[in-house]
Length: 201
Ligand SMILES: *[C@@H]1O[C@H](CO)[C@@H](O)[C@H](O)[C@H]1NC(C)=O
Ligand SMILES: *[C@@H]1O[C@H](CO)[C@@H](O)[C@H](O)[C@H]1NC(C)=O
Ligand SMILES: *[C@@H]1O[C@H](CO)[C@@H](O)[C@H](O)[C@H]1NC(C)=O
Ligand SMILES: *[C@@H]1O[C@H](CO)[C@@H](O)[C@H](O)[C@H]1NC(C)=O
Ligand SMILES: *[C@@H]1O[C@H](CO)[C@@H](O)[C@H](O)[C@H]1NC(C)=O
Ligand SMILES: *[C@@H]1O[C@H](CO)[C@@H](O)[C@H](O)[C@H]1NC(C)=O
Image (cartoon, rainbow, N blue to C red):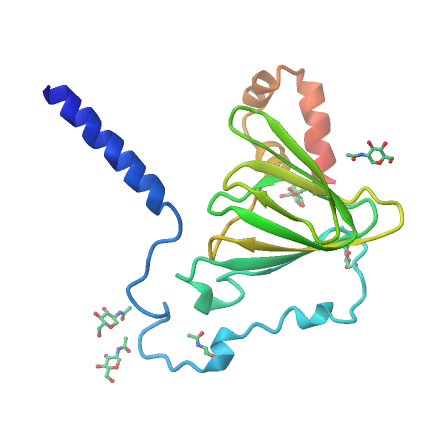
């Protein structure tokens, strides 16, 4: 009986904890240093103006507005990124540890996908106007496979600081002990080194 109650308590806690997982609730309207005077400019980000009539980049480019670029986003649980994909560009496999991503394809086409924790791959071909959700913390990618049209997407994140962890960089470009990678990937050292060297270039 006693054990049952304990397990129940743990179970309830787990459910409750899951329900509140996300940026913490704040107890003030904004999170700013004491005694700072704010005006509307503190809630305005103009860094995306460069997109209007600007040159299209020659490689994959992500323009973010998170609490790092707009400090008043701290505590507000939202952020944005504008993603530009020239012809053939990829956003390499990566995760956002603190947020799910809701991507709206504004122009072009994109091949997108994510892998869940049972290692099932969910892939989709998006056309202009489509919206796709990348669940929080899962490995995902985006790829413009079109030969003529660039693609532009806008992503919303459920965190003011979603964070990005690149899988290639975090695994192969951080000096993890050689033997660990060899064994993890069931590969010879020479194979792993080839991948590592490719990222250093
Ligand atoms: C901000 O002001 C409050 C109340 O006046 C005080 O309790 C708190 O310690 C202050 N925080 C900082 C970082 O100075
Ligand atoms: C904020 O202002 C109050 C009153 O003007 C002052 O007492 C307090 O020390 C100030 N706090 C900080 C962190 O500057
Ligand atoms: C608010 O904006 C002003 C200028 O627009 C800036 O000097 C100030 O540091 C900002 N305050 C905060 C808390 O970000
Ligand atoms: C990516 O594109 C930008 C703008 O077109 C350019 O300045 C930068 O050098 C490019 N980076 C690489 C790695 O090609
Ligand atoms: C990219 O396009 C080519 C040509 O249409 C096709 O063969 C290939 O499967 C596509 N790749 C992806 C990842 O969609
Ligand atoms: C890998 O690390 C090197 C040195 O720290 C750095 O110059 C390079 O840009 C990194 N490559 C990638 C793909 O992150």
